[in-house]
Image 1 (tube, rainbow, N blue to C red):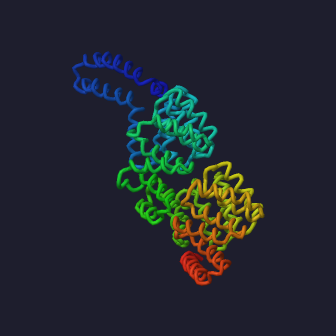
Image 2 (image 1 turned 90 degrees about the vertical axis):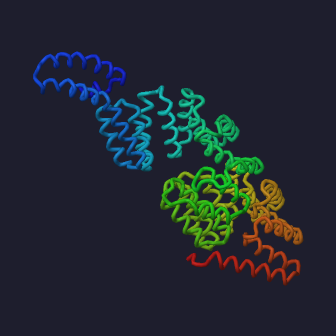
Image 3 (image 1 turned 180 degrees about the vertical axis):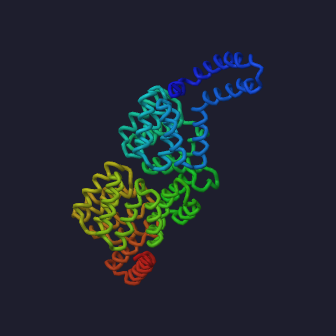
Length: 465
């Protein structure tokens, strides 16, 4: 009977309580016995607490949630659901606690439960979409977020979620449209700036990304979405030391610390700090083994260290996590180091389909084609890579590689000069330029470049193994 009463809507519980309460209190007050006269007060207080019991449980659960006591929240919500299995607010609180504990499959059960019993509740569909993204079910997430937006067409959280989903599914135009509909001053404004900037960078629209970055606070809060935006843009501009500085300011207990560690690892790798790169990667993987892109980054470091079999294993591990696109990029690079150009080309063709505006991928494709003797095609892709992003060192390396195969030594040296002006840390350009100088009969310049490569390679390998 009490269970049934607790599952009534709040207005119905209070209507009954404040109808029957005064009547019973009136009869209890007719006695002159003092203890009996206290009973009306106690009765009304007890009835009020009973009416408020579901709301009190919600308040307690949310209090512990703010304290990050997710285990206690789960216990409270389970007790609440035993009494009130149809209370959607409790279902969503249980979902939130499980998401915080990274128990995504269980969280999905509760968000789906809420959507099933309250199909008119936008937050239930939104929650189902978010957990589907965490489980890499972006097709299912797309369906759920559309249902949420049917119920709340202007909700910034739902629009932001759809923008992320559309970007993942390759609909960049739809992503930008959703971003444009969100008030930049809203709570999700920084998140949308981050997404927009990253998508612009991946689409080789660097001026648009720079425009977004120019409007950021001068010193974004450590670990904030604006800090992510700034770090990602600086990485695209080869400002790797600045990236390390931004990432090192993020505390280890920050929810996004694993992402900053991944970017920091990539920056260390480009700065020829192999041991520091692997250290950051290991920390990232330990924090979020199910979400990290660390295995891909680990593969790149291991490949440059000559540990090619281990690098290939890391690529496969990355693919097992559902990150096929980034796995193909990493595997292409590993195959390049192994001299397996046919397998490399297979990887780059898949990667180009997923990232048609990536200068890095087109550079890898050029290297694969050149390795297979398809020099004219390799030249076209190398030129395209430099046009997409003239600061990508690997693009100029690939172009120089083609020119060397065509016997155009001086042009190859010029390409490498341009690449090293853009990124003086890219040690393999020094090695290739040393080879080009030898072919041109420039012994002094060749020895100087070889010495520079040896110096950077020694720095990269220091304490690595």
